[in-house]
Amino acid sequence: METKEKFSKLAKINPFYRNLISSNFRIPPLGFANAALTPLMQVLNEAMGKEGEESFKLLSDRLDSVDFGNSNEAQALKMLAKCLLMYNCFGGRQNRYQNKHELSECSVEIRKYEAEVLKLFPDNTDLLLNFALFNISMKNTECAVELLNKVISINPEDPNANASLAFIYTVEEIWDKGEFFARKTLKLGLETKESKMFEMCLSACTFNQGKKVEGSTDFSMLYDDHSLNIDEKIKYLPQVNLKDFDHSSHDKPIIFIPCDGKYFLIHGIALVLSIFETNQGCVIHLHIMNPLPQIENILENLRSKADNIKIFYSSEIGDVNFYGGPSIYYAGLRLVRLYQLLSLNPNRISWIDVDSLIRKDIGQIKGINDHDLTISLFDNGITPYWEKVNCAFFTCKRTPEMLDFFRKIALFAIVNNKKKTYYWFSGQLFIAMLFDKMRDKLDINLTDDKVCYDTSHDEDSVVWGVMNEKTGSSKFNDYKQSFLDKYGIKLQ
Image (cartoon, rainbow, N blue to C red):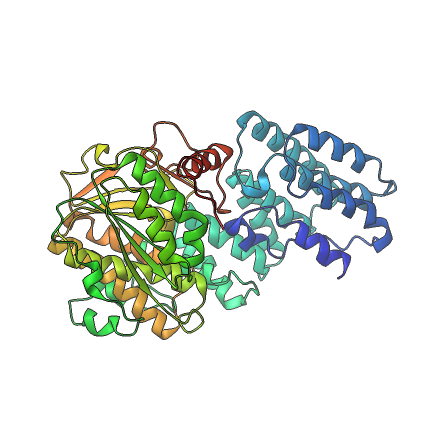
């Protein structure tokens, strides 16, 4: 692997969204031999995964000890490396800053380096792009846009700059500019595994301008007039026994947990135990996709520990590859099962991601019994349009409007899966569009996302969830372990 390629991989300092625009993070060809970069590579490699001021000082001192020479090129590369080091040590790689003071100081320092480097190389598009990406992660959007537009002025066809602007303008909800740069990015054919993201930008921007939604995905269900037979479409999926979904003889709220067999072992058992502790007045429905052989023994064990809580179970066996891979099959198609469950049961249903823990009685959420849909929106100013509707936890009740809402979501998943046009996040994009389109027709109870589904794990939250990297904080993990210890269960 060439040094430039290694550095590029190390330089992916941002999570999924930031990676999509930094996947070609570029180290400028400043004429260094590979041998000169070796000490730098060792320091940066050690920095990956380390956070905090002590780690930064230690690694920064080591970086200072590397002799690059006194040329402008050498100093530019060293300052660029310092910026990358700051991100690693102060949490920028995950784009979450626990300490706002550190974030502010880090941002100021990087802007200083930026000014010095760009004074030396004002027209180097690689450097301009890199500092733009740093600014995006630091949430200095205006600075990033300024740098990216300068790249475009030098090279209008620069794929990374166009892609970055497409993403920024879409997140900022400047729909016309987002559409312009998304079209340009798709035309340029940026080679990245996240290229579908720019189709999402185009689809979101056209929808929010009142235009026909564009992209390879079929969004016709937004305008569906019941001409599509949902029962026929569902036959495309693995068969399930609908009798397992009918709990109409019970008058208790249902907590619905759909997931795959392996993920249930990792997260689902603790989630069920947390329900035992907090929601005695409910029933649990587990729907396991491709369950592991030990599922029956696990269910028997859980049922023996349940106190006045019934656990219902349904399953399906599906060819993961046929349905587009694990993330598409397990994450996207499970929404079809919610529609089937809702159609058979009049009681309130709570949908919850399996990698969660319940802290309080769901029934205590304000207004939950007075509305058909209780849900929260992520609206912190930096959340992309397709992630604004919180699909990790919500509750719903069977009404004609709710059945129509989830019927369209199920149709979108099935039709696009069959056409091979369903991709990661496209389902959430459709839900956001449908939510906006049907908002006036639905009886909605909007709640605070920090109360309903909290990834920072406040004591007063009803549900705790994991973060993007699918791991919890120490508080989350300790809470999870407390249930396993109390009920004498060891995860396999």
